[in-house]
Amino acid sequence: EVLLGESGGGLVQPGGSLRLSCAASGFTFSSYSMNWVRQAPGKGLEWVSSISGSGTYIHYADSVKGRFTISRDNAKNSLYLQMNSLRAEDTAVYYCGRLRNNAFDVWGRGTMVTVSS
Amino acid sequence: QSALTQPPSASGSPGQSVTISCTGTSSDVGGYNYVSWDYVSWYQQHPGKAPRLMIYDVSERPSGVPDRFSGSKSDNTASLTVSGLQAEDEADYYCSSYAGTNANWVFGGGTKLTVL
View 1 (tube, rainbow over the protein chains, first blue to last red):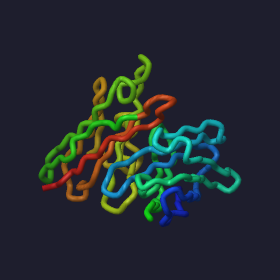
View 2 (view 1 turned 60 degrees about the vertical axis):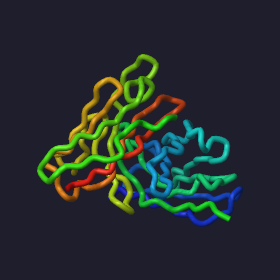
View 3 (view 1 turned 120 degrees about the horizontal axis):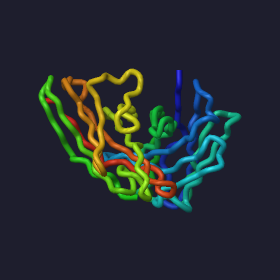
């Protein structure tokens, strides 16, 4: 069974840092681009970042560029998101998603990040 | 990276059909740099749950998605049609499109589908 599971969320003060992880299983992790998508409370989905299967190609949404860093460890079947200089508007559920056939076909359950003093 | 435009709500009675639109631009839904592409997808999300892929590449259904769900596109507007509405179809629906190398992926604001 293809599964994704996020962890690492929590409460952090503005300006703080947090590192999210996404564990993958049931598929050849290194063959797929992986993405982070977030959803603020009561709001819609927002694409955050993507990384190619090899880790060569990386892209960020303008809203997080320069503050967030996506990475992956194919040996550990894991995806990461290092979030620095966090702001209140970064408060959201963060999902990891697998990109296949130009769509996000597998999603994790998400991990909640709350930025508040 | 502007969001795609969806109606905030849609509704229909059991057994009826409902269509949700998703309007973008020639830089996302319609393509990019004079190149047309069909990289529109649709997601269903029930409250408190992760999104579920329902349609990819404008009109393709993943395995396990009922054929009551169909997709189409015309120029800069994509559409999701749900036929034979069932109670379990009540959920939020989001469209998404590839938006080029720099912008990557963009989502619509979401449509809340109510089955009356």
